[in-house]
Image (cartoon, rainbow, N blue to C red; front, side, top):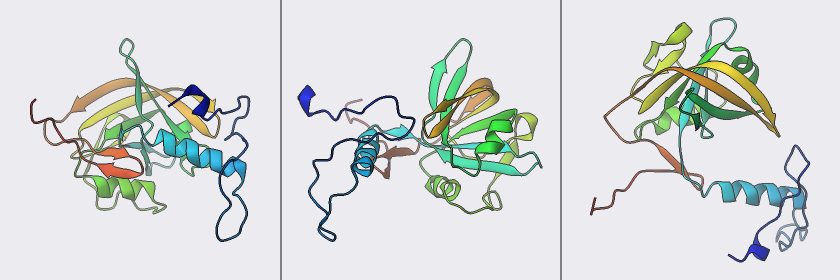
Length: 198
């Protein structure tokens, strides 16, 4: 793609930027969608072309109730010290629980755990009812059958536009030799396909 064809995003706004739209009018209304909505949608779709793993972040609320949410923004930051990051939407009803938590766990889902991902991405309040979990550091629930687990102390958090960015220090971790990871790409779950020559 030529550089002049790339969409330029204005800086300085904490939210999705406004931009001039060149999209055709909507067939139903005859009006072009709002430029802001178009840029946000196009930006999200472009980000979706980067394949990621899928994780469920778990912690305990102040009243001891388990809390969890599906996240695909998990990333490694540092090996020494062992640091990871992830982000959560500022309008998430679970934001305050994670902000106040001393510890949380990153559960890296395996290929057979799509239903768990969907469950923790929903608005359903009872997400742990039929789930097999074990207690990790500070009693944080660890989901059975995952590809990997990272138990973290809540090191810091930083504003990041419409999300809050969490920095975690890994205290313990483990990985499973069984199964493949769950992959998310272009709005759909995917499975790894290995090169037959390898």
